Length: 264
Image 1 (cartoon, rainbow, N blue to C red):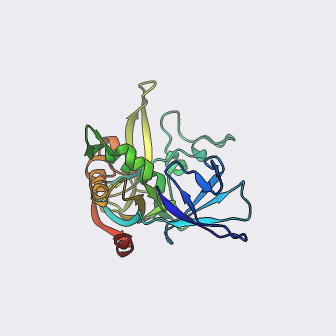
Image 2 (cartoon, rainbow, N blue to C red):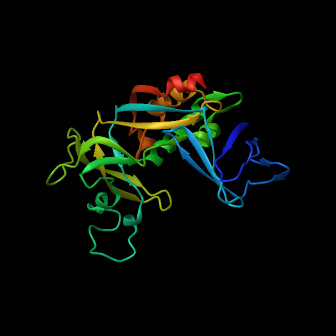
Image 3 (cartoon, one colour):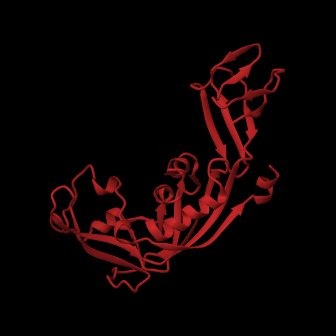
């Protein structure tokens, strides 16, 4: 990526250039800064900032006209199941035992994703993984764009909120309720034994939205749109994707900062 860097320094320094190998050319000598650079990205201001450790009291920044952002809204056509594997799934200290081995009705409490306001969410990494997996269906030459999407895609939200809230009182197993408890049998791939799994679920019709950022010179907007459509019809979001859960339709795909990107 060839670009110009503006030195915001107390010294009278010239403009420097950054080539594709991320070497800063400092007249009259060349210093390889690949191991001394820390990058910060501000997607809102479209500024890419890096700090150089070996050269103190300097700060460089340059515009990133190739980065575009899009706001995506989706609506579920199949239930969305939650089963995150976090610290609470394997606590450090032993607590009161609930259920029996392979059948714990309280399992969902340790694997659900709910805010302090009782709103359901999925992590931004779930969206990233979903789109990465869906990208293999968009072909490029003899392969696909999967590695390109994985290299450039960023999901801006840490938590992607759903339009569903935990009900008061006991959870129902009725799948027609907005939020319910999904109970089904699963097979342990190691022991081949059958276990009963309890997962917090949002019934069909759930909605959410998230913001993506990527380099349009690596993946163009039509390819990204195709990846999101494939994610909804072929992959799905959250748990149970292998048996068809988490599927959705794309309500809207809105490219943000379109005028700025076009001018760049």
